[in-house]
Amino acid sequence: MSESILAAISRILSGDREAVAWLYDTFAPRLLRRLGLRFAGTQGLDPEDLVQDTFLYALKQEGQVLDRFRQRHSGSEPMAQDLENFLWGAACGIASNRRRSLLRHPSAPIDSLTLSTDREEGLTLARDALERLAACLSQSGHRLELYFQLRYRDGHKPAEIAHITGWSQKATYKLKQTLDSALDACIETLELAVS
Image 1 (cartoon, rainbow, N blue to C red):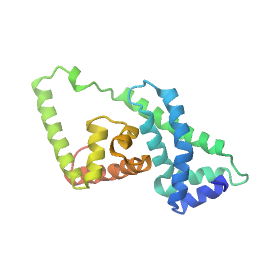
Image 2 (cartoon, rainbow, N blue to C red):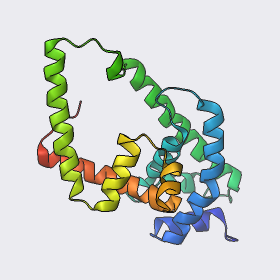
Image 3 (tube, rainbow, N blue to C red):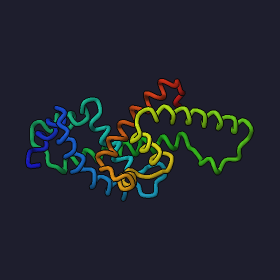
């Protein structure tokens, strides 16, 4: 893309899908490498999830986050490095929030728990809720259900899902967005509590 960063952001804000693809294709690979180096081995901070969540954040609410970047640089044309640094800061902020959340609400794998009768009953209720949620998601289409199973039941990363299914990385990125919306709708429909 030979146009300026501000012109590209203006096209993104106007809904141009090619400009959104350019943003992702240009900045996601380097961001993924940097996040991998920074957070490798950190429990609960998967670099691929952080990249996807960073772009979701940058594009949310009709691009308000990107618009703030554009307004900051309205007097002079920013460089690609400026936008990369902006996205890096957003990714680190998301990672920091996740880390704080993990510290506040630590969890242990189910295998490591000694289950009492009360806990077993709670797990039975949780399994029932998950089964109802899976049934609701299955109504959203085969691709979305397959993405959910591969990502959250089998534990594959988005790049692995793209390799397994033959989908493009853009398609798996879009499926994560669609899955988030479908999950919200199912949770609301089933009146499941989210803590």
